[in-house]
Image (cartoon, rainbow, N blue to C red; front, side, top):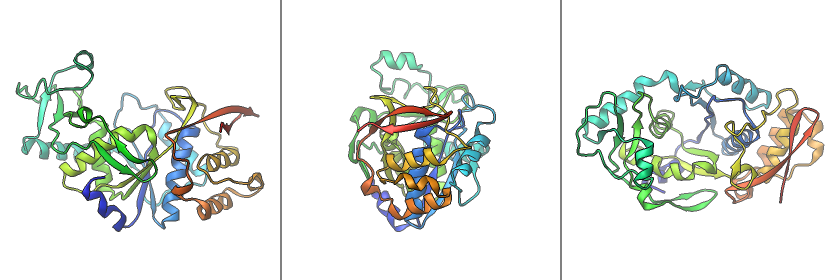
Length: 313
């Protein structure tokens, strides 16, 4: 991990759950929410919720409020006001302007199709062409390539050096800010000290660590939880039409999330309140007991109309 991350453990614990409002929460989302929540509470820290709605082309109307209501139904209450990326455009633009003034950004006209034809990794084709910034995608000159880092759960993560050295997009040609930029700017603004999230973001984390260095800010520690997959390589996701978790009968799914995270709960917990279940989990949870895998397969067993899951060992 980068040198600046060494200070993360010395800062007050501040974690976050940052869903995108592209649909309702599914079981994979619940695992990430519960894992990040429990780690924050075990460490006597703050747990924040951020709605990552920066990509307005994918936002589903009403999904953000539905996500918040679902978290409340599962007893997962956040400690500070929810922030929405769509309301923070000026903050992101200030950072882009700062990087432009440092001559670290250039305009790019390459399409995804062109980059794929060139091998899939952008190789600076537009770097010296001096295209105007208007109506162009903007790329950041990579000055702090990060090809490996230490994950608290997965251990040493190594990234393809060519990908690590890539000048990546921070603003799209349609004017939308790129995820890699906004997530780092938000983590800095919220003073996030640890990020607990799914293992699908192992590679992007290296790029985010490089941006923390570029902005001369301390980076969080990272712990990437195993992904919930329906079959190897096929994660539960909104894009894959994973079923929404129930808000009227939360306890079974919560119990299954505990099991997924290695807590070994007894079924007798189902007779207790959600508050009691979470309090029990806080006394048991540790990153050391979470399975050290990047994905775990589950099978779906419909009981009533609520999705129930059994972990396939």
